[in-house]
Image (cartoon, rainbow, N blue to C red):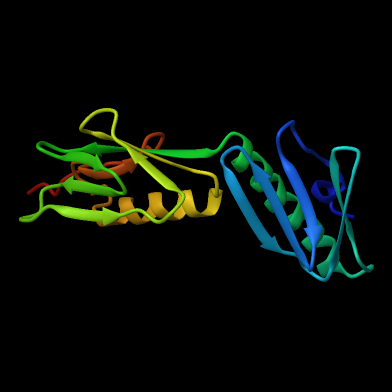
Length: 177
């Protein structure tokens, strides 16, 4: 059996997990997340813990039990603490400004770039060269951060562009005559 799938999820105070109609719903202080259940996984909730077990002895059911456990653990974490991704702008004159649900970027193009944020995602700019994307759904936060980075990814010669806060860009050496 999957080692990850064997571990129960401890549900913190203020978080409510409900399992019904082939859906798992997690409600907390930062919102509500729902996910369809997989027929290969049996999910039970008891004594403030959520348990996962494969429905049969197949390899797919075993793998899916670990996957479902990880997804639900991220849901519980998201509605209680939330997730965030930090991006930094590297380049002369590169600026970011958050206005409500919109992120305005000036990143060396001839025009400013505006990126709309979906519902449930907050964007902040503590400084002009830092972007913080926050939300309760880990997948959506990561996807939005990847889309913002893809507007101007770091280039390999000077390292200018939008990068994750912990990303290291390996710079190439310029061509010599």
